[in-house]
Length: 302
Ligand code: HMG
Ligand code: MG
Image (cartoon, rainbow, N blue to C red; front, top):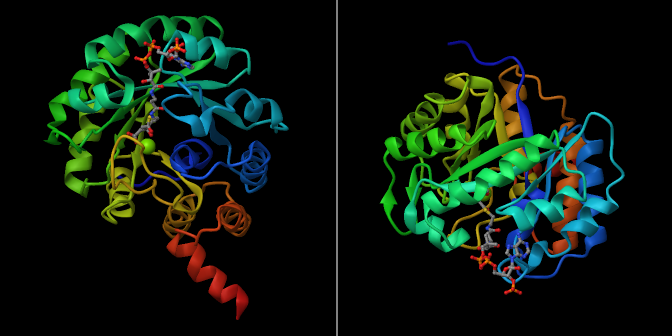
């Protein structure tokens, strides 16, 4: 199959990235990051999550973040909602899309959302119904789609099962997530193909953490299947609070550079994106985690 001519990037740094920060991040900084991302041409931004503040205090300012965004037309803002309580709080902030997040691993489901896979689907069903009735699109995330920190390797059949259950309750899109970044291209392709048994090509995305440095290879392997939507995190922000040692998502800058190099359009201005990454890393007092950003910053300085 030929590679897609356009790819949609879902920027998850403000959520997946900042949920993992040990230090408190001001709401104003989160909002400024989102403003810089949309100015750089990102059309899909995962802004925050409506989860328990006891479990993830970093996202406790969810409503304030959503209220602070000066929304740009053509940009869609998504939020995570694990249950009806999360949906109700999120709905008041008018997200364009919500994300229910399950797992292909029982052990990870318990650690992350405190219930079994079957129970998670039962919890998601009324959330999906309510969101769709309100005209809000529903995405599902399938964590640990290739490997789990507790159960080890995950068979593609388990991804297919969760995708089928999500399709049955009306989830409109699924993200195949390599939560701990252990995947390699063929394994990732098998996991994506499992999801594709239940979803069309344009409703399956890749969400790859870069712990083992395989994420770009996995993006390329996904493109070869025709997958044209990826979750990425500016400057490689993040990790996962329930997957020790996992690093952030693949850096948005690195994926954009790869895509543009392949002649694939993204609508993203790489220079402005690098500035957004420098802004948030500067606010956090951390080095930039994007290889492309680091290389181009050296070139800029020369
Ligand atoms: P629980 O304790 O089983 O829930 O948590 P509960 O219904 O028994 O409620 C317990 C308390 O939490 C109650 O408060 C509820 O009101 C409150 P209390 O009476 O004790 O004061 N509560 C809530 N508060 C605010 N918002 C809510 C909410 N729900 C209950 N929505 C729950 C279940 C799912 C809420 C909890 O386990 C949780 O918040 N987990 C955090 C999960 C999370 O955010 N993980 C990280 C995001 S997922 C991810 O990063 C993976 C992804 O990137 C893909 C990948 O890479 O794999 C998407
Ligand atoms: Mg993630």
